[in-house]
Length: 240
View 1: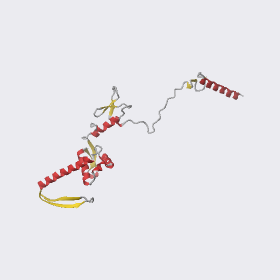
View 2: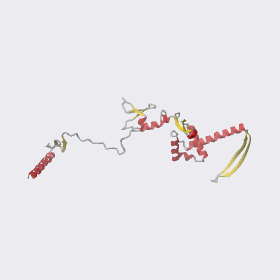
View 3: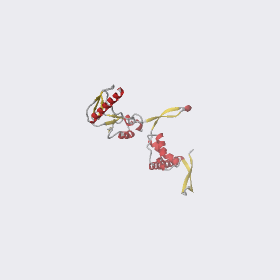
View 4: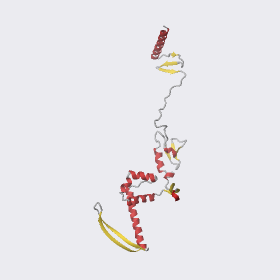
């Protein structure tokens, strides 16, 4: 009978709390944890801190900062959020809500004060030395030499000018020389023609200064595409 009385008492207390909640009247319940206040359909536990919303963890780990901040520094005491380049001191707006870091990332690719973008900056490379070992040597980026090498690659291996627009060729050049801007096929065609003009002038000068006897022979033939050609062959004896 005692157990039944306790159960009935607990039921009456529960009903009393539910009625008070419905009527927005405060009621109290004493327990081992602490007192509770029931009002306006809310239960607050006295003595315990309020529960806050925990930020959901990123599945890819903690958020990483942009690589642009390796080359920029945020300026203090500015009306708007402004960052300056550590190399050339050019300023950009960097409010994360409106500008983000896209403009700063674009600047890092063209900033001439950055060591990796400076065409006069030497790079350390390794060349074969005596005994099969490697010897450190400095190497300077030369745009004209790279363009001439591409033109010779097209001429010697008889590639089409559009070979420089292939994804594989671009990937190869970026791995070999990241500072090189791949020329277009029109630029390569002009470079090839310039090599022809230079070699023609050099050959004429050589014949004029170092050759006493030159024999010219012509020949006609057709290519695999049935295109007709006439070639001119020069046999010569130099001063040696």
